[in-house]
Length: 484
Image (cartoon, rainbow, N blue to C red):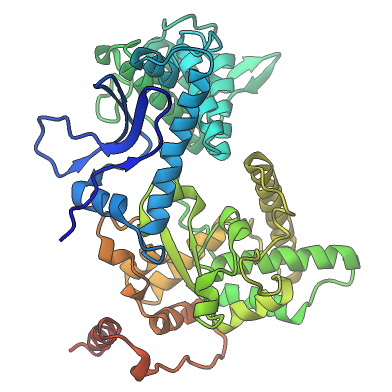
């Protein structure tokens, strides 16, 4: 049996060899290790840990590194990891154009402590370098959140020089975010606990990076949710009421099908409201995916291989940092097909299903802005539809679609593993759990058909076409349902 590869390699840059590896340099007893980029110059090595990537089991990592079959479920993971490696190679190429490559030079360049004098050695400088790195990695949404947090910190924490930051500085900032401060006779600075928690978690990431680079020490760490003398990071309130029931979703679907909008609305606004309602319902019926995923959804190989009965996609939020467990399968039940016929593009190989979201834009920053705008449009128009068409006093937004998908299937008795898998939640490094036939498509149709109270033809199960694994899974489901 051919030995598995233990790394992903790329072409060297001058005298520097670069590869993606697992960093197993630890005395701890563990079966999971951090991923790292290994730089080798004159037989000396530098390991740069990929802190944003999940730890991997050695067997799974080696299987990904060794994959060659383009149809393998591990190939998308290999391509992502290879892309990360290529990104670091490009950084070294850029660095090598102006200076002789050394491991110390590469380390300084990658840690953000000093990059051609552009980033100052300070707490704020490290924060800014993290934002810059995220932008380079096309994580524009996260970078934007980090920038908002930094803006708030600079405004209310005061002028922080170098690394003269401690618990008192963070406390001062946290107090303004929690209670506000009076400026010109007005209360300003007070924000919701969910936002405050997000900002403090961002600050914690920056603090940890400063510790990693040796600028701050662990004994002055200011955060803890257990020690009352330190800063506790709040969580947002659980939005238990932020969902619509199956009956309410069915009413919205009927509004879409019948196009029963108020006569007082202009024809142009009716058209825009119809589009927004369709996208909201599509989010709900497509396993609660967000608009960033909707904009990237394509008529890919899976769609045509399944005869137009299913979509397959990888969640944008996790695709860059997780393994193949983020692949999502969506059964195209009849109501979803009706919506696609109304507001979706014509099925063509690799065409976008909802091209109206990005309008052809390929730049991630532009896509982010368009997604934010479309989310706002959907919220505004859904509020009017709920209020003026159905008489509901509800402030519905796109996030309700995802929460409604999970809540309604759970209330319908669907097992939580199916709900979690359908929403793209990571199932760990269990490779077998990522295969599409973990749940046969027929089971997916039956489960997702519970999302609406609509009379539809039940998808027949062709026993002759089921694999042994699918038949075993179907039998297990039937036994569970019958209480056997």
